[in-house]
Length: 257
Image (cartoon, rainbow, N blue to C red; front, side):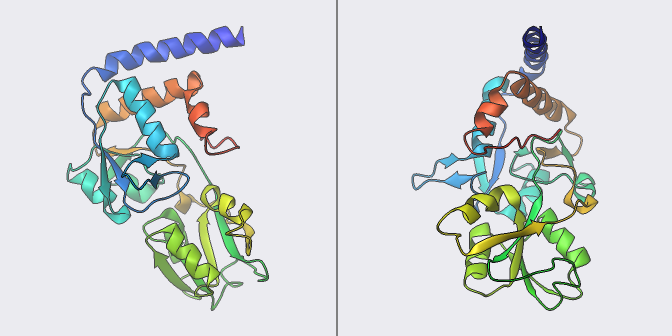
């Protein structure tokens, strides 16, 4: 019976989606130039892969739309959306109150906590007092950076990075003491030979500054496109497509509940 109900629900979503998708022929998705594996990676031939490019491809099949990817620097994604250079950001953008003042979001499609990472040998208390005088690394223009700026900037030195790889390299070479990064991104590194000298030093506590999950962003007031994306994402979760894509990259459920 549960399987029948799920099938019927998916059928209803497909019907709704068909009614909304007819107007969408081309949707330009912005993607950050800086790779963010396993969410996004660029091959030598220029092709993008990863959880989010795969998700975009599946979404656009549902919408029967052509969806080119336009490469933009991470901190230029929101300006590119506002200036109509792109139509959607589906690129690990946290839903925060500050961002909601200038752009609109779909319902969250995944969520991840923030993790403190440092050398295995280092004993740390990751409170503002415990990290006083430390050099802390964080990727710029992220909710993690906002969190650190509010709570840690008075007693610690914050160093901002364009890419996760650059930040990790500085941590491993001792140029910073600790970094704050998305747990889903950093966990595979810690478990690998390349990251064997690093350790999980705990998760940051839940805080409104981290937002309410990761959503796809559209221009302010573009309710038609936002609804199309919401309907497609809901249909993909209902029929198992989302989990099929997710399982290629993550062993745990990352969907926002």
